[in-house]
Amino acid sequence: MPNFADQDPALRPLLDRVLSADDRARIEPLLTELGALAAGEIDRQAALADANPPRLRSYAPDGERIDEIEYHPAHDRLAEIAYECFGLAAMSHRPGVHGHPARTPHTVKYALSYLYVQSEFGMACPLSMTDSAARVLRLFDPERYAAEIAALTSTDPATRATGAMFMTEKQGGTDVGRTETVASDRGTHWTLTGRKWFASNPGADIVLTLARVPGQGEGTRGLGMFLVPRLRPDGTRNAVRIDRLKDKLGSRSIASGEVTLDGAYATPVGDLTRGFRQMAEMLNVSRLSNAMRSAALMRRAVRESVAHARERVVFGTPLFEQPLMRATLLPMILDAEASLALVLEAAARLDEADAGDAAARDLVRVLTPLAKYTVCKRARTVTGEAMEIRGGNGYIEDWVNPRLLRDAHLGSIWEGSSNVIALDVLRCLRRYAAHHTLARAYGERARALSLPAGKRLAVRWEELAARGDRLLAGPAAEQEMRAGRYAEELTRTVMATLLLEQAAYECTAPVPNGRALLAAHVYLALLTDPEALPRTALAHLAALAEGGSVPIAVAEADV
Ligand SMILES: Cc1cc2nc3c(=O)[nH]c(=O)nc-3n(C[C@H](O)[C@H](O)[C@H](O)COP(=O)(O)OP(=O)(O)OC[C@H]3O[C@@H](n4cnc5c(N)ncnc54)[C@H](O)[C@@H]3O)c2cc1C
Image (cartoon, rainbow, N blue to C red; front, side, top):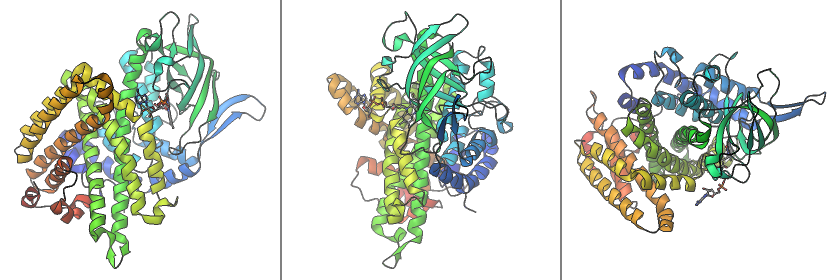
C-alpha cells in the first residue's frame, strides 16, 4: 500500500530530531494513517473536488436571498478528514486532540498538514484561516470570544465552525491602508459597509475583517478588527452578500468570492486602534502555513517524478538511470527536503515564541517571510519540472501534475506576493537588524557542529551579515531592488545550516547514516557554486530520493 509518510526519506528522521520523545511517539500512528490516506482516499477525493468546484446559489427557489455555496461531496469528505478526523485546525489551541495532554506543538500540526496537502492543497486555506482566526481571538480577546474559539477548535461535526479573513479590497490588497469598508457604532454592536474583493471561504461561520473606525485617522492606523458572524445572534442570516465566486486557476476545491458587507452585524476584536497589527498576527501564521503547503507540493512533485523516472524506459534505459535526468532530479529533491526542514524549524521557534521566548520570537519574525518568499517561489519551478519529467502525460489532467502546478502558483501570490514579502524581509533588516539575528543564531549553531562544513557555514554567515550591512548602507531604492535576492540567500543559508544540523544528528544516531550529510554537503556545494557537478550525490541519487543508507565516509568525500 503506498504511504506518503513511509515514502518520505526526510520526514521521520527530521521529526526524530525536532520533537520531544513523547510528541514523536504520539505522532507516529497519525503519520502512518494520514500518509496512507494522502496516497489513497485524499488524493482521489481531491481530484474529484478539483474537477467539481463549488457553486454559488444566491437565491432559494422562492426568490429569497440565501447566498449559499454548494460543495461537491468530495469537498465535504476532505473537510471531514482535516477538521474532524485529524483536528488540524484545533490541535494548536486546546488539549485533548488525539489524546494530547496540552496544546499540540505547531511542529506536529505542520508535519501532519504537510502529508495532507501533498494530495489536497485547496482545503489548507480555510483550514489555516480557521486555525489562525482561533489564534487571533485567543491572543486578543479570549473572554469575549470563548464560544467562537470553542466552535473554531471543535472537531465535532455538530458544533464545529470555520473561519475566514476578509482583507483585500479592489483598490488595496497589498496596500491595506486603502481599505474603504466603514464601521458604524450601533451601541450594542457595530455594522460594516463595504466590498471585499477577495474572500476565500466566503460562507465561513466566523469572519475576521478590517474596517475604518470613524475618527481613528487615515491609513492602517484607522482600521479596527471586527468579527462578522454568518448568523446574527437572533439566528437570522447576516447582511453578507456573496456577489460571485472567482473562476480560479488552482485551489479549485474551495470557494473564493467577492463579498459585499451590506450593513453587516459585527463586533470588535481586541483593541480597535490596533486592528491592522492584530491582523498581521493572522497573516504571519498564514504565511508560514503557505510555506508548509509549498513544501508539500514540492515533495509530491518529487515523489511523482522519481516514480515516473524509475518506470519509464527511454532508449532502453529507465529515465532514472540517465545522467541528465539524475541532474534534473537532484536539485528538486534537495529543495523539497530543505523546505521541509525550514518549515519545521520556523514552527519549532513559533512554539518557543508562544511560550514567551523573546529570541525565538525575533527569529520567527524573519523566518516566516523568508520561508514564504523562497519556498513558495521555488515550488512553482519544481512542480513545473515535475510536469515536464512526466512528458506529455504531465500536461494532461488525468495526472496530478497540472493540479500541483496550478496550486503552486497561488502560494506565491496570496497572503502577500513575493515582492511584498521581500520588502517585509527588508523591513526586518532595517528595524531589527534581522540579518545579524540570523547570523548569530545559525552561525553559532553551524559552528557548534563537529563537522568541517559547519565552520565554512559559520564564515558564510559572517559574510552574509556584513553584506546585509552594506545593503542597508545603500540608497533606499537600491535596497529594495536587492531585497529579493538577498532574502533568497538568507533563506538558503538557513536551509543549509538546518540540513547540516540534521546530518550531524543522523551521523551520530544509534544506526549512523550519511544520507543527510550527503544532502547537506551537496546543498552547500551548489549554494556556493551553482555550476558544481556533485558526482557523489548523483551516484547516490536513489538514497537521496527514496531513503536508504549512505556510508558516512562516502558523504564526507563530497565536501
Ligand atoms: C485565489 C485567491 C484567494 C484569495 N483569498 C483571499 C482572502 O481570503 N482574503 C483576503 O484578504 N485576500 C485574499 N486574496 C487576495 C490576495 O491576498 C491578494 O491578491 C494578494 O495579497 C496581492 O494583492 P493585490 O491583488 O492587491 O496585488 P497588488 O497589491 O496590486 O500587487 C501586484 C504586484 O505588485 C507587487 N508589489 C506590490 N507592492 C510592491 C512594491 N512596493 N514593490 C514591488 N512590487 C510590489 C506585488 O508583489 C504583486 O506581485 C486572495 C487571492 C487569490 C488569488
